[in-house]
Image (cartoon, rainbow, N blue to C red; front, top):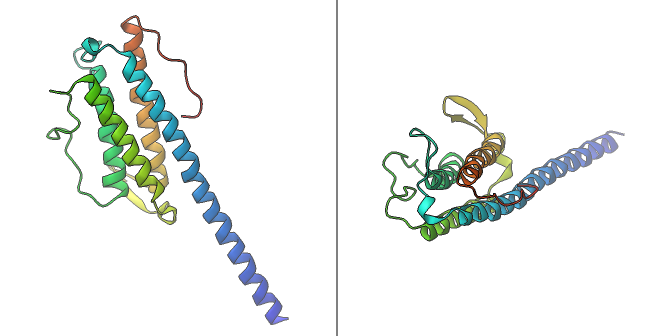
Amino acid sequence: MKYLTCTLVVILTTLQYHTVQGQQNDFIDDFLVRLENSKKYMVLVAEMMPEDSYHYRPTPESLSFAENLLHVGFAMDFHCQTLLGERAPKDWQTDTVYKTEGKSKKEMISLIEKTFDETIAFLKEFNPESFGDELDYFGLTRNKRQIILLLSDHITHHRGQMLVYLRLNNIVPPRYVLYQ
C-alpha cells in the first residue's frame, strides 16, 4: 500500500510539473505570436508617416512620431536585455542608438525591426522557470512574467500615440490587426 501511495504521489507530482511547464511554454509561444504581429503592425504604421512628418509632435512636450518609434525600441531592449537578461542598462538620456538625430525614416524602421527581432530571439531562449523571479521595476516589485506583459502594454501605448499622430496629419491609419 505504501508503495502504491508513493508511486501515485510521484506520478501526480510529475504530471503537475509537466502541466505547469507546458502552460509556461504556451505563454511564451502565444506572446511570440503577438510580438510578431505587433512588429508587422508597427512597421506598417511607421511606413505610413511621410519622412518629412517624422518629427511632428502635437505639443511641445510630446515625443515626436520618430521619438515614439525609437522609444519603443529602447524599451524593448531595456526590458529584455537589462531587466530579464544580464546586461547593464542603457541610459535614455545618453544613448545614441535609439535617438532620432541623423537617422532617416528607413534607418529608424530598420532599427525597430532589428530590435523586435532581437526581442523575439531573446524570448525564444527565455527560461520560463524564472517567471516568478521578482525584480525592482521602477520602485515596484514585479515578476518576470509581469514585466513581459508590461512590455506589451508599453508598445501598445506608444503605437497608439503614433496612430493619433497619423490622424492629426490627415492620414488614415492602417486597419487594426488582431492579436498584437
